[in-house]
Image (cartoon, rainbow, N blue to C red):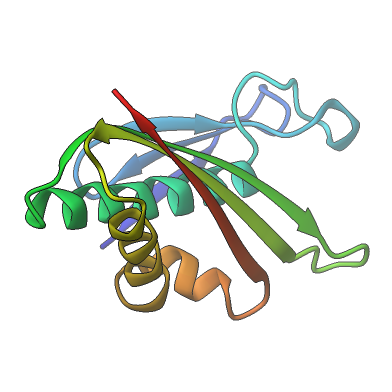
Amino acid sequence: MECTVNWMPGSGMAFAAETGSGHLLNMDGAPEGGGRNLAPRPMEMLLVGAGGCTAYDVVLILKRGRHDVRGCQVRVSAERAEQDPKVFTRIAMHFTVTGKGLPPSAVERAIAMSHEKYCSATIMLGKTAEVVTTHEVLEG
């Protein structure tokens, strides 16, 4: 896995990245750090990646279990250390999973499997941060 990140001179603190799979994305800094707030912060991208990784796992695990999953939303929030390096110290993930006749125990199991075995992002971030999860299951 690889990517290339290029600073865009003249933009303040904006960066353009190209992933190894050929996708483009931008990142920017906060105005107080010289950025113009035109794109997500790099640390926000880490949270997005962790949320996407675990949501992917949960949906895949439920589908493989032949459950009728129809929606999965993960709200991710994080706390950071006060001093540099300002690593994440706590990450909270709230899953809202929608499905038809979806057993809450299956959702709980899928989330646990993701966080204990499959989601590289949350397992890696869990080395510095406490990762906590909550969930709700909606019929739909």
